[in-house]
Image (tube, rainbow, N blue to C red):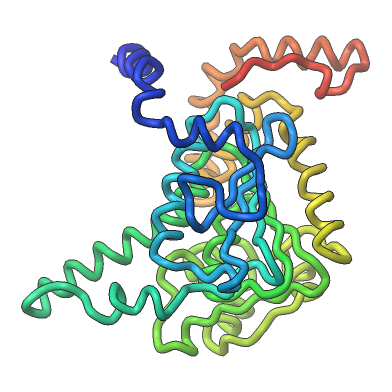
Length: 309
């Protein structure tokens, strides 16, 4: 059955995914990349996809289109055998100002339904839809490197905590803003940030006070792994890091991401059992042979011709 479904998918991929094929041939040209209106998608290096939040005139605020476009974009990237790693950044002066309240007010403040039960049911559906916008990043088997400059507010924190590696500039700052607008953050920050930082006290402080965290504190607490002098240096560093990841076996890299996420949410015995089940098939890849041979010949992983995955 699995083989049949895979065959049907490969045969019909071009029928349901024409827009992404068009995106692949394009690069950032100063605006969003069709079919997207809030994202610019480019391919700055071999096997590297760059997804740029692109509403600079609105400080990359997250409007209705953004929430669905991120799902479409990362769902397509997950299936794209040409891509081995993703870099996410923001266009303009800052990474993102968070949710576009003016554009989203209708969904949040005017739920559909003619009584409390129906309005609540529909509100839950809306929230679940927005949660998927960032969960799709975590579910994507390709590692995601996010590069933050300037402000990263509200929904921006939800976004970056779903990414695998976080970089920022010296002028970057982070803010869990939701309590200032009368709600509890509901699309990932309260669930992922405690596992990213590790200090429950600090997470509580940030979430309950909405205070700003600057780059030095973000580095010291583990929210980001590197801080760069400016955006240009950060993007160069992000692409260099992405290139290093892309040079490795995609079987090894994607298996590593999936098992790291599994181990985060399960006990050590459960994670070990899952790992054994995973590698009982994945260790049979030719990538192991190619990697071992390259090591014996003192070659770089970049010189190994790994097959697409």
